[in-house]
Length: 156
Image (cartoon, rainbow, N blue to C red; front, side):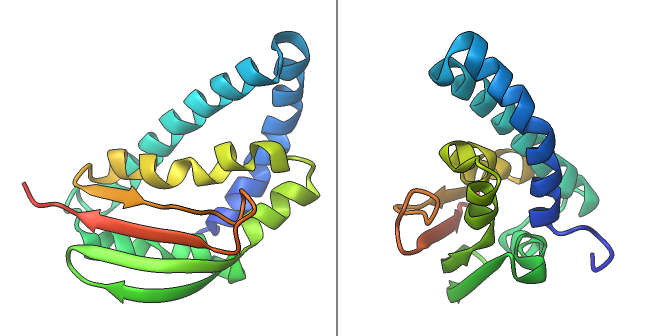
């Protein structure tokens, strides 16, 4: 995994492609409809990415396998994280600095940053292993002081 691009760099590349497309959609359709279309497309991409990462683990997914992937999202200091607890059935952490949010704001995409990144966090699990769910009450992207991630793994 050390040779792979971190997710922050992937998101930067994607955002450079998405920005003019989103702006054109917003100009023609209005911001609300453009965001609905973009959000739906990003959700599908997140599910596909989750499935691809599950496949890279031989389809043997678990909370531990999910936690192992987490380094891709934090690579290069992309996130400053306070891990509260990790176990076979849950992974609880807070993000205290989010360079994804900083990057989108610098690119003039702060108004859709939640679609480009935050919205992927839970839907990624649908593709990776739908027994993993996310509960989150706040995000830095939306102006909170931290993001509170609470992932749960449900057997069965």
